[in-house]
Image 1 (cartoon, rainbow, N blue to C red):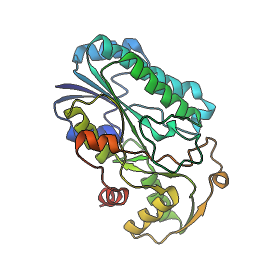
Image 2 (cartoon, one colour):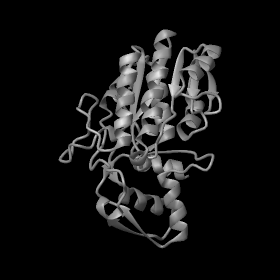
Image 3 (tube, rainbow, N blue to C red):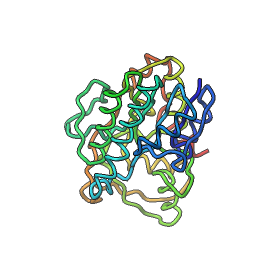
Length: 279
């Protein structure tokens, strides 16, 4: 199986390289521009892949409020171009989405299933939902995986929540962290393995894949400091007090029952995943 891995130098792309079964061609932004149909055709024709995995995305949630066009170009139109190419060339497209396609149901306290009605509350969430729709509409042989709060091996100056907390925890002895957003931060190593299992079992359609359990960002930060043995006082605050430009879902825990049924495997608990990452 020939696999074209787009965004191979990112956190998820790096971990996917370790677990994918087949011949993998790694593609970075210098190799392919997903917002250009011409670039996609030029690059992928030379590879002639059986599977295209797209990990490239615009993930600047707050900046998307000021520049929604950039978010939609990368998160919606890019996947649409990829889906069209894959449909025309009989390749499978694997695309990643986000828990931020939910958020309007502020009373929700049960994990979202794949069939539940989405309702984004930010430009970023809207752009990712549009990307999902384009992929499903344009490519019959597609696999869309929603996930949440990714953290993995950091490269090229990019960070993640865990690395940011570790940096701040070494600089300060007290931090304020949002405590009214409930979700499930996910290790890219575990998401990569889930993706590999879904590919091996030839799945298509929409799947949720996060570590198991749920937490808030405040509780997540406290666990980071506990494992890292950093003496930091974490003060819980509200999203309103934090004052981010973009709204976030109050509750966006995803049910992974469909993934477990299809693969026979359960994603590790978020605390176990974090401990493995930090050690």
